[in-house]
Amino acid sequence: VRTLIQALKTKELRNKILFTLGIIIIYRIGSFIPTPGVDYKVVQQCLGSMNSTSENFIGLVNLFSGGAMLQLSIFALGVMPYITASIVIQLLRVVIPRFEALHKEGQSGEAKLTQYTRYLTIGLAVLQSTTILVTARSGALFNYRCSQVVPDGSVWNLVVMVLIMTGGTGLIMWMAELITDKGLGQGMSILIFMSICSGFLPQLWEIGWGTKGTDGNWAKFAAVVGVLLVIMILVIYVELSQRRIPVQYTRRMIGRKMYGGSSTYLPLKINMSGVIPPIFASSILAIPTLIAQFGKSDQSWVKWINSNLANTTSVWYIALYALMIVFFCFFYTEITFNPDETADNMKQYGGFIPGIRAGSATSRYLSYVMNRLNTVGAVYLLFVALIPTVLIMALDLNTKLPFGGTTILIIAGVGLDTLRQAKAQTEQFQYAGFLFEGTDHKEGK
Image 1 (cartoon, rainbow, N blue to C red):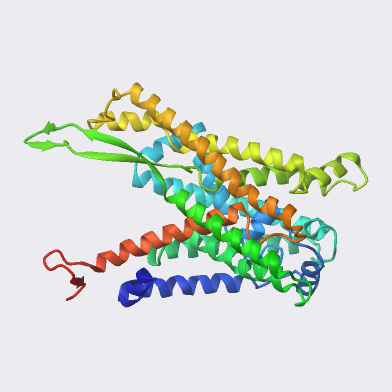
Image 2 (image 1 turned 90 degrees about the vertical axis):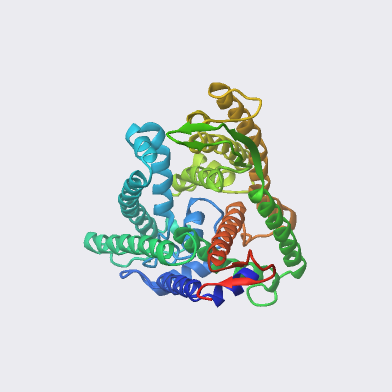
């Protein structure tokens, strides 16, 4: 609260906050504008007749779009194409040497990778918008509870709708970059945060109040809120935790100047993979469910998928979900953190870990530490991701909880990151004086 008050007192930061809020308002307005060619009344009837979807691929896209996907609005795809493109480009660094070389070039190389990410985002937007419209027209998007969502099924009409949805994705990407450049916080993360929060409180209130004020349960509401607060505290504590490895730099003479001789540390987070493992696991497990929607409901393989993989409380789903989270936790960390590269950089600048030889010994030590941290991080992710499933089974909640493992991680992560940036920028304009204790320095005074 103190950081927010200080930020509002500073003109430049206040303008950044207002600019960010303006972009968020435009983004939320666009989430309710239906795509031309969609029967909006039929869509609302479909949404009213179907229950909340589980946290599978469709649920994730709808979650990240703030509910815009199931409303088939112009922002129906939300930020999901950009997230997918960013992850794909990052994974391709391992396969394509050119991408790894661009990553090592610094700012110019990262700018080129960002450009590739934008191109891939547009391509994925075309593919995803086509898939959504085809499944919506066939009724599979709404679990075959309604039809005639798109009355005109001509090729020209579908092409126009695909172009509009793709243009909406491009506009979202542009607005996110505007927030990053001129606003407060990381633009794409802010938009994801607001999309999730837009449906968070209404779903939470529905547990206690119900749909008509009579079918709610306030005891379950209190239990869910209590568990949510405990999990949020745990997530914040773990996300702020670090394993600090001490690093000592030797003195070096370069020209006529002496460099080095300092002591620092290498901070390693417990959960270096972030929210990626639950997203990957949910997306992969949703693929068989999407395929089964195009099969006949009386076929044996369709029945097995619907009863085991489409049901998030089944034993098969929980077991596969847990195994995939553990796998992607180690896999993604292995890609994003390279012990050999870190050890070589430390050796190049005269750094070493006390008691550990520079070079390959340092690399083996970092790998050993990361494997231990990944084990703890995987258990932590499993606990956070499976808590919603346990609550659904324990409290007999028929509807989806207002929070899931992915939701909690995103809310806590984005909130902490935005608060750090706000505090850092606030300290640039107002900080404690070093000549007179207890005084504050303000820009221009």
